[in-house]
Image (cartoon, rainbow, N blue to C red; front, side, top):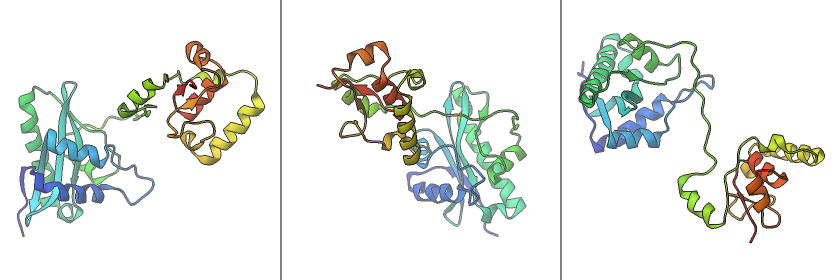
Length: 237
């Protein structure tokens, strides 16, 4: 049987990492996909710490991690089923990847290695089998920021502001109009896809008049609508 060996990640392993990531995506809709997107996994491989398991010059497993807030964080961990199907080979590959990654993280003064990972996956089972403790009663939550870094300068240029998220619920009166907008937003499935009154780029809502009252006071229907759509508010003119 061909031996599986562990080594440092090389730039020419990128295609192998992509294949591993695709193999890690669950076929069942009831199992959550990997937490970190492929772009972040690849960036971490190149900028932080990554080791791969290789068999017949092909990448069959990988452990990718980085230092964050005094501890090591696993961004990606997976071993192909063709290797894991052999209990002896699969166990050695998983243990070898994790040990190798630990050795590269230890000099950074870290005391712990952790990972947020979907339960019930082979990767999760492999981590628990190698001394990782599964914490119960925890739930991962996330919220997307309304404006990305590349959009901030454009928003400032038109005098726009990012408003508190509670304003839509605080808008009093105009219930019929609110119900109509809620219905339309619900049918589109996304606040940003509702274009009425938006800028040509769809990145901000233009308020009536100069918009300064809505922005300064944090109130008004335009401000509430901008918050409900998940976009900033910008004055006209």
